[in-house]
Length: 356
Image (cartoon, rainbow, N blue to C red):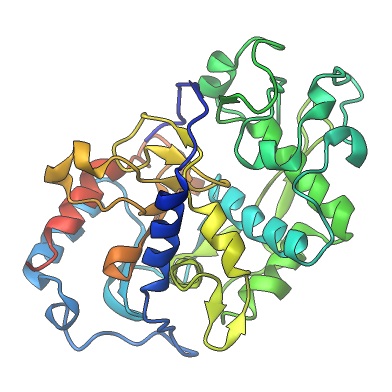
C-alpha cells in the first residue's frame, strides 16, 4: 500500500452516522490483557478458523511480515514472528500523536479552533501567507490545512502530488500532508512543554502496560526547508496491539481513562473520502477509516474499521464490530524492496478466516 495520491473535497458524516459509530465502539467488552498477553484456548473459541489462519500466516510470510498478531476480546487468537522486537513505526507515529493531542485538548492545554497565527506557527524560510495562517488545529488534524509546502519525511509520491500552493482554501481539501502532521508535532511540544516520546511513554505506554517501548528510541529529524521536524520511534507488535485494544475500548484501560472517549470517537470518524484503498476509504484525525463496505460486500470489512498505517508494511487495524485488533509489522531496517504488504488483500484473507 502506497501513500495516497488523490485529493478530494470535504465530506462530513451525518449526525446519525456519527452517533451510530460511537454506539458501535461502545459495544466492545472492555477486555484488556494483563501484565502478559493471554492466548485464547483456541482460535475457534473466539470465532476464528485455525486452519484458515495457518494459510494467512503463509501468505503474510511471503509478503514480508516480521511480526503479526490477531487479538479478539483482549486475548491472542494468532501470533507469529518476534512480537517483542521493536520495528520502525513510520507513519503509525501520526496516530499516536493524534492521541496525545486529544489528551492535551481535553485537558485544556490546546484548542482545536486555534489558528496557526494565534499559535505562532510559521516557516522561517518560506513564511506562511495570511490565508495559510488562518488554518486551525482541526484543519491540520484532518489533513485539510491548505498549506502545500515541503515537509520532512515526504516520499516521492507525496511531493509529486502536492497541490500548488494557494490552490485550495483552508479546510476545503484533503491531501495526505506531512506538513500538517509535522506542524502538529511542533504545536504539541509548544503547547504542553512535553517531548513527544516521553509523553507517549508516560501517558500511553506505561498506563496500558507496554513491555518494549523505549522513549530513547525516538528520533526527530529536520529536512530543508521546513523548520518543523518529523519524528519516528520503534514499537513491537505486542505493544502496538495494546494500543489497538485501547482504541477499541474508546480510550479506557480497565477503570482508567487514558484517552478521553469523546476524542477517540471523533478521531476514528471519517471527514474525507480518499478512495485510494478498499480498506481505508476515509480519513479521520490521523486515522484511516473504512466507510464504503456496501460497495465491496465480498470483502466483509465492516464500516467503522479503522487503521494506522506506516510505510513498508506497518499496520494496526481495529474492527469494533468483531472486537478485534490486527497488527502487522515489517523489518524496514532491511530496506523497503522486500517490505511489501498488500493490506487490502491480506485483511480480506484474514476476515475470510472468521467462522460464520
